[in-house]
Amino acid sequence: HYLKYVDKIFAVSDALKKALVQNNIANVVVIHNGVDVNEWQSDKNDVDEFKNRYGLAGKKIILFCGRLSETKGGREIILAMGKIVKKIPNANLLVLGKVDEYAEWMVDLAAKLEMRDKLIFTGWLNGDLLKSAFNACNVAVVPSVCFDSFPTINLEAMACRKPVVATCFGGSKEAVLDGQTGHI
Image (cartoon, rainbow, N blue to C red):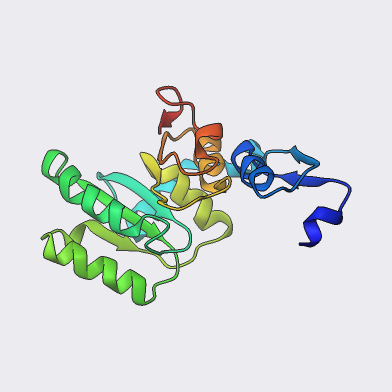
């Protein structure tokens, strides 16, 4: 209601602007979020130490992070991992996020697919550990099945020169160039 009375609204993606306009919210300007690429670099020793800490040395690492939920694609990434590990046996899903009931549900689903050992949960990370996680991975995934306005995970992964596999729901398709910086 109140958004109709402001002079200007800044949206983080064209997808969010479109959603606002569809709801009769005018005067929307898009300013995409950004990250400082230099802030996302990690020392090789820090990355190696991170891999050793979580038992990831010599493995293919798929990074999934953020709020763990059905809408953020938790179910989809576990089902996809079931297929991935059949083709890439040393693939592991590195999950950065709060270890809660949904995380336990993800573990149960992975166990049913006989790949529980392919999930590594770190809990929330920040600072150098977070940067090391992004730099350690081979690919980052953003499997949201909801409208996700402009996931910063895309930017953080690309700042670390990692490809991103994301869904088309929301602003990921504005950051990830399909076939160039990842896949939508």
